[in-house]
Image (cartoon, rainbow, N blue to C red; front, top):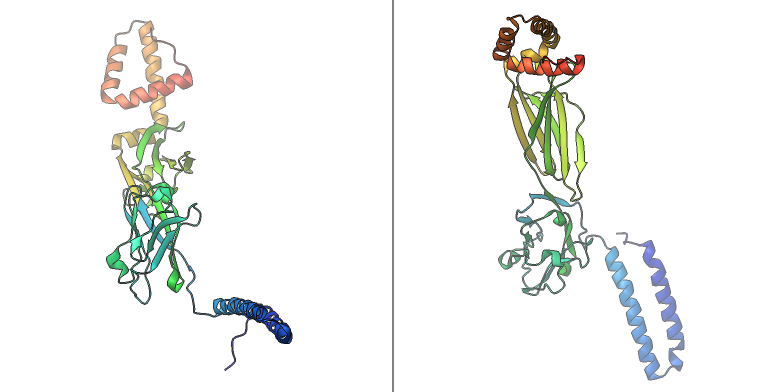
Length: 334
């Protein structure tokens, strides 16, 4: 069988052999003390070389590998998983949980049967623990309570005696329910619905659905990020005739598997009004001309006409009246 060779270790090995040759050639003329010192130097050099060779041998240690993702919402308790394979009793050993982006990096340390929290990062004080019972079965998992957004990050579980490392990515999210903040009409008379949701993390997406759950085409989502890194998102839907009367605004974040919904039901009368806007404006124009001229000539029918319009179609009357005043600058009836 062809032995393993490592190019990076050839130079240290050659240097060691050269040094050994030199010292052996001078050995005959050295005192006992000098020979002892020479032997110690050789021992140290040999130890370093053996460590280099050991690090290079495959299968002797486990790297971090891909990170396992754990998700939670603010305020929840979570477990960051870490296990020995094969299972082994770790109660009398050392276990280090840390975040390399923090100073100090130590989140929780277990050492020879007890917690060692002298150098624990203050942000995790009284919020971490490992189970001695589970350690006996090789379960090195960390319990972390009342998580916050500052806990987001990459955690390392280190078992030094076997040089095993596990990496866990913690994602702490925030959610809130969306609300329909505005129902309005655009210049074409079409109904527009505005949906907004505040306080999300990570950034979510906004979707509109009809009564059958089909996705509807809406305007681009507007996103605002606050100083606390929480997101506010909003979206506007223009209602078409074919959309029906029931609409759902859905805000979702797939990374933390969270979804929030809000529904709105528009009346048939409201939809009919929005779909026949031109006829309404024409009707209002005719009515206004009749009413204004009737008031000027003291005709008696103008007041009953106004009353009937307000009773039968109050939404149509006031909406159209305001639009008409804006577009045509209707003079005062006084």
